[in-house]
Amino acid sequence: MTSPFISLRQSLQQAQSRGLERLDAQMLHLHALGRAPHDRAWLVANDRDPLPAETAQHLERLVLRRLAGEPLAYITGSKAFFGITLQVDPRVLDPRPDTETLVAWALELLPTESRQEILDLGTGSGAIALALQHERPQCQITAVDASPQALAVAQSNAQRLNLPVAFVQSHWMDALSGSFDMIVSNPPYVAEGDPHLAALTHEPLQALTSGADGLHDLRLITAQAPSRLRPGGWLLLEHGWDQAQAVQALLHSAGFVNVQSRLDLAGRTRCTGGVWPA
Ligand code: GLN
Image 1 (cartoon, rainbow, N blue to C red):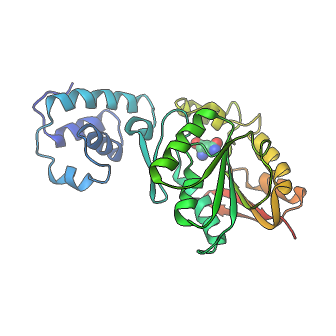
Image 2: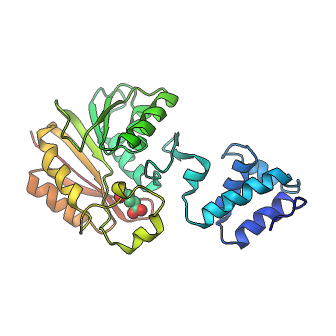
Image 3: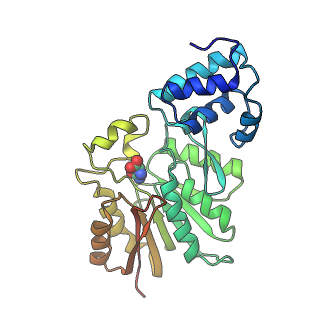
């Protein structure tokens, strides 16, 4: 175990030899030392400093949590997402960089001076809605989630970031009225029983799984969206790496046009969208 007299460098090496990724080891050290997550240069420049004994004890608990598979974001309490910092905890899904693809696509479709009304379905931590509001202050953004616990996280992120997103508790569009110029969503899309879930046990299952084929919620959203989209409005959906064809088919059969998909940073087809025709 860690001795009170080892250097930061030795401690970082020990953490890695126990199975942590280098970046995770660095982030946990910065967190335990009370330094900002962007201070990795400081850590590298000062890695001959001794690790204080009380930090070593705190760090040990953090390392054990990470080794047990808990997302780094839950341990440090925050996650950088598309230029904003979100506070996250087990009430919400850990925001993925994959989802930044959906935000980037939405922004391409929204002129800078845009005053459009946008709906984010299943907002979780508020990641998509808050990133869009941060980039497009003129837009009116409504974010819904079925989980009051998730909405509490999203609302506190909105307050801290001073972003005027409106929040509504709703199962998809059930509690909504009115219409929108764009609907975006990163719904649950993992198939129940997918072996991949074994690595995601720290996250809320209701934010991950969606029926036997993972498409249950994508079907509901695709069916409901036409009643809430203005003519010419886009529906943009995140989905699993192998679901693009199925989601394209759902959009076509609901009557959407200009249906297309986008790749995430890892080159997997991660988002599919279409236009509700005029
Ligand atoms: N992309 C996540 C994963 O497969 C799932 C997120 C989701 O279901 N929306 O780990």
